[in-house]
Image (cartoon, rainbow, N blue to C red; front, top):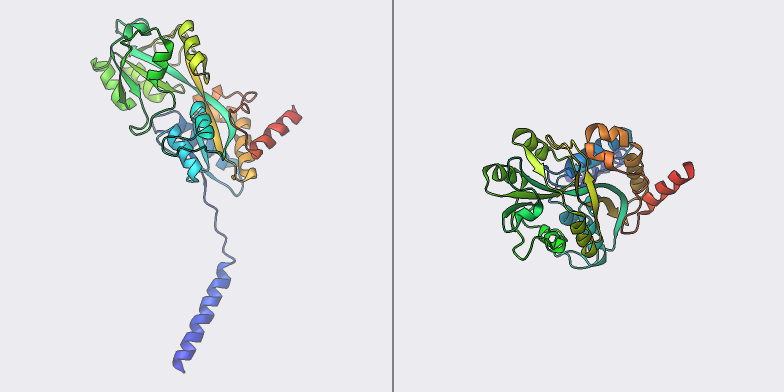
Length: 322
């Protein structure tokens, strides 16, 4: 009898707990944005965007996750490991139509949210270097920035140099390295220069300019035209004067758009809210992240892959309200 009472009591307590738990409200997990390395511009941008979103959103939240960059991000998005991602336009388009080395099949669920800022090619030498043009780097050891040793971009620095065609058959000797390795190597003379494709301003580059002094080399218009003929995602760009200490003149270079992307099955309302937060909070975002000032709301919808319905909804509303 005691056993039966004990069993009955246990069942009743279990049922009571189950009924009570149905009234407990649990917060949904934050939506995750895959960004880039902590020394990139992408990670702090994601942090600021998440902060502003969370200040205004009701019942939703976003978190920024540091990652190994664009290729890692589109794979993570395709796998469902993250909800949004920042990635280079060439990486996104290539993944959409044919995949990546790790996942060699079309990432057909990728959808665009917005074009954000561009990544520009920084060609960096020490301030006292005898190098005056990038053709002077022919045959030299050059540090080439990578966010992860195991991830290669769709278009690498060697591809750009080969397409430019004006460094001759010797070209350059690229040495893959992180930014924290590049700065001392540049100062000590272990490398003659550095190639960094990233949004500006980069805090690590600012620090190097302040502490040791750097110069940025321009790319001639004819070299830019040859690069674009092979890699049309790249475009001419000008880095304004004063981005880095000692940079008194604008610098002509090339750039590549960065995109905010998501998956087709992402909730429409979440994508709509994030798109609206991004494009209607630019002045607020720019207070904490300089690259946000480069976001152009009029061009944001021109992603090279189809837009998500949530983003389309926002862009249509924006046109109606203009």
